[in-house]
Image 1 (cartoon, one colour):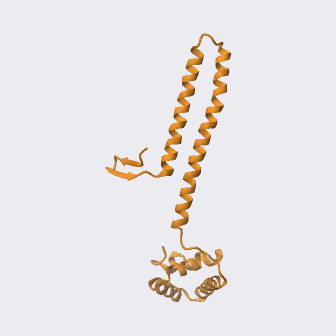
Image 2 (cartoon, rainbow, N blue to C red):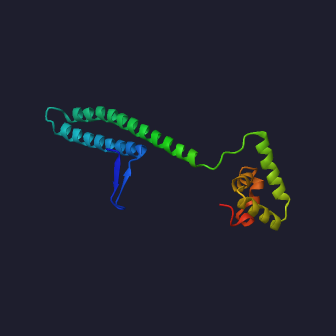
Image 3 (cartoon, one colour):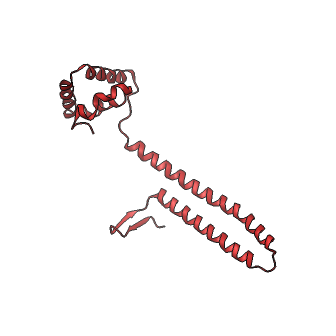
Amino acid sequence: MNGVVVDHAHRAIMKADAAFTDLSAAMKFAREQATSLVNLERAALADRTLTHEGALLQIANAAPKSGERVAMRLDAARAKAKAEIDGIAKRTASPPSLKDAVGLGLEQETRARLASMPEKERRDAVARAFSGGGAARTRDAGRDGPPIAQPLLAPSACQPYCG
């Protein structure tokens, strides 16, 4: 492939994704190898110089070798695609959890304060935090905490600010 994919349905030209191209090439290789084995079978069974058992033996010897080649290509393409997906997930994930003691303490304090507030006061505090740019920190404090603290920022508590 030349690195360009034409999407005829949307009349668009896009840059080909390397992982997709490798998967596509591996699948094409698998089809070609399968066709090759079918052709070998037809030729071996049509060969009058071989007994039926000899033809079957020739096919049986070729099939595992072909299967190994196909499996190697498919595995390599799958690994590349998985690495690409993992990389995308890593790049687009929400901010990482705080690892230092101060950050963890801040999250715990945020959860404790929110838990101690009445419903209306908590809703107002969450709204202020989201309007002041503290949305990610407030959301993460509820999300990254223990499961018992997660309902603090349930949609009913911070609607429409939580996303």
